[in-house]
Image 1 (cartoon, helix red, strand yellow):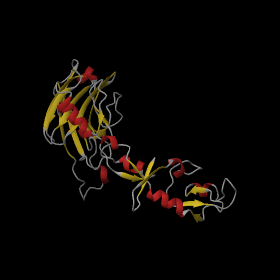
Image 2 (tube, helix red, strand yellow):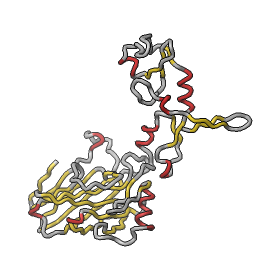
Image 3 (cartoon, helix red, strand yellow):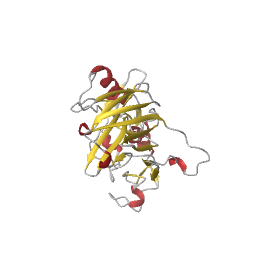
Image 4 (cartoon, helix red, strand yellow):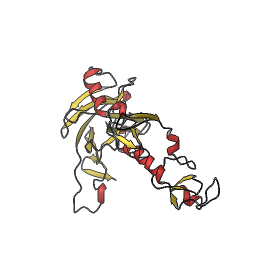
Length: 290
């Protein structure tokens, strides 16, 4: 890693091996406090109790005296976010980059179009799909341009597995996926965005399917954020349609994606107050499944 130090005359540049900023025992990045034995051997605060405060190199006590010099070096060392190439300009203290990268707005997302290898921030992927490359729908990427809060219909071939749409006022892509299994069809809706990005507004969705007078409705309290499309059957957040209600090889569903509602103060169920439900309406009989 290149390091720069400033003087009155001119900045000086040097090279720092980042391995010296990791604990020699657990090989994890140092965090403050850093301890040393009387011979100067270093250990992190997590390793000292595990060693019973006995230095593994010289057997002298360790865990009582702090190494202030190394702590100063650690505090003065900053590294760029690994998403710098996608636009992130944050400079991070060594050892704290993993915490930042979990919520980094510029975490890479992948274009959902089949055989496209484009990677970028969620907004870059949106612009790439909308304006630059994929202006014409493909058989596996039917184009839907919708407004958040408005219902729309999606007709798709189940075998295509994927429909791509744009939430144009949010500058986000969303996907509708279908998975035909021996016992029925799974349908799920996702948004192409980093899962923990604080800049992406939390959304919910409702999807319904009607056939022969029967209606299946699935309401999800949260629109799942994904960085890459997966073609494995979803384990959660999906609508299931039994084979008895699937006629032919196509599905037409009605979907509404909207801003997630805030928790009500008088609700006793906590943050997950919006219970996911599948509603099967068969003539006059209503069956709720939680």
